[in-house]
Length: 227
Image (tube, rainbow, N blue to C red; front, side, top):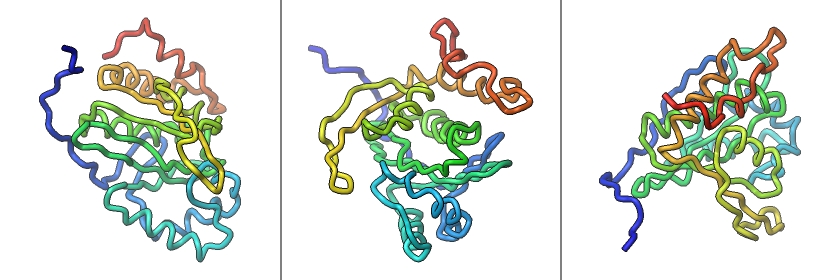
């Protein structure tokens, strides 16, 4: 009888709200005090909330209590994304944390348009990927998004997540039934992903204009052995 994959561990630790310092970006625990820093870019990018369950925010008086609420969630730690140089800010979280199953998700990601598709944006996600898999030792790292959110689908693929399937009409958002696409990275897959992302983020992989020299797909080549 095949019962699956045996595992001895009974539970995984819950994430701490600790700072994560990168080369291009810092992650600090999100707080209500970040509202004024975030507001100019939140106010200017209403369309960026199209695939989230919250926003847009026409007035800062509506944004402040929202930010305070998500920053205080016990079951879903959020981080403020602060690039070392350049424009752009945002937030992201670890969510749907199943300590008994060893599964954890990176979700509720909001990056301002000026932060999207930058080294800092990718490193921000990588810092939480590394925290979840290396420091906390989770077995399964999840990425899910609405199936018509092309940017998020591409982000999952570019970060080395494997597509698992789509749940049809899984959620209702703003009066629309929407499908959910699921992606994951498993523990045995992580070393290659970690090595590839680390190599992609090296300064030597970017020219003087900040353009990548080799794509992440190049470093994810299956012929390259993990560390």
